[in-house]
Amino acid sequence: MAKIIKIDPVTRIEGHFAIRVEVESNLIVNAYCSGEMFRGFETILKGRDPLDAQQITQRICGVCPVSHGVASILAQDQAYGIKPSNNGRILRNMILGANYIQSHILHFYHLAALDFVDIAAILNYNGRDPVLNNLKGWVASEVSSKAVFPAAPFLPRYKGDYLTDNEFNFTAIRNYMEALEMRAKAHKAGAVFAGKLPHAASLFPGGVSEKVTVDKIVAYKSLMKELKSFIDNGYLNDVVNVAKAFPDYFKLGKGCGNFLAYGAFNESNDNLNLLFPSGVIINGTIDSFDPLKITEDTDHSLYSSASGIHPASSETTPAPHKSGAYSWIKAPRYNGCVMEVGPLSRVMVSYIKGRDLKLKKLVDGLLSVLDKKPEDLVSVMGRHAARAIETKIVAEKCLQWVDELVPGEPSCTDFKIPETGTGVGLTEAPRGALGHWLSIKDKKIERYQCVVPTTWNCSPRDDMKKPGAVEQALLGAYIKDDKNPLEAARIVRSFDPCIACAVH
Image (cartoon, rainbow, N blue to C red; front, side, top):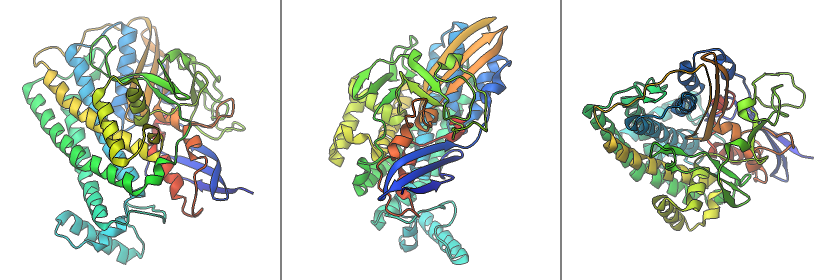
């Protein structure tokens, strides 16, 4: 008989999330993911001025608000029949790029690294680094006063196999602390042109409302150079060292094996030249992306909304007592297939298309250092590696984009809100493919629907009872100790779930 293991809540992620797994002979044979709240943003937006949308939807998430703002203004651009100015397009890339960097640094160091780094090692530190000595003293006092380890914010912590190399533990812990400062600097860089972050004030249909000045260019560039240095000298090295220490995690968490990317970061105003291209990989075959093939199933979701229809026509009608449903997350599918989205999907699509020679060189170099093959990236450790590679690419592109700005030139295009209109904003949030579908009637929002990255990854079963991407990634995982299911937590956190987004 299968043993049931519940992790409720799954901590060190964004939002309220639970997983339930059935284990036989220490192997997961069934998995269920549950988003545990309802928020109703799509209902809130009905009847409002369309210009409210980019501000309200940013409140879906405090970690990746820029992505929602960008998706919203892309949908409005289309509905109004406008294109951003050249400065406006570049500024959108730069603001979104800064948000990517802070989000990826947050995920690795503050959400996922503590699954691998032994924070207890700090008690053995005897060096001269004042940051580590202060942390050691604080942790020691917490432990002695509470007789537990580790102290908050490092709780909860399962017993299990952590890094045994003390020197690397010290380096990783030091970088954990520095990463807090780097996240703040990434926010500051984005805020130079966003007005403020989180929740950018300057994102606007037609571009960005902030003006381009030499002073702002210099401020942004200075912060981005610091971030690039941390990425090159800290983040990438730490990911490689963790990957070398835990090679088994290149075999765990493979999941559905299908990948979806909408594409992001317009390099030209015709929207045809994207830094991260769009594409789908199904059963190992790459194909072009068709947005009309997206549907949302609700059979196992706590909604009475019609199932299996395109987001442009769907509704969000909560049904908290629905029989057989176990999640407030819908089940999006592409041509009926379960899809994984996120940095790994973007890297896989770009790598297979082979157009970005720099990305291919970075991927091949990392695989060589780790003695792995491209197919090994489809794993827990591959997701961490893909994020690190992407962070480096985005930081370098931000330093290029800032030099393309022209002070004094307009950063926004004039527009009028039409009586009626429709638009779709497709972009890539740090966590993956993000879409906003908008329809306007009488100059007001008639319908608004969002399908976000974690809706894809953490979906429940669909109408055909096919498990979602994370549910599939958990299958077959070996759980050494059912009281300390660290392996399952590592798999889930490799996707960087944002349940606040998924249950918007």
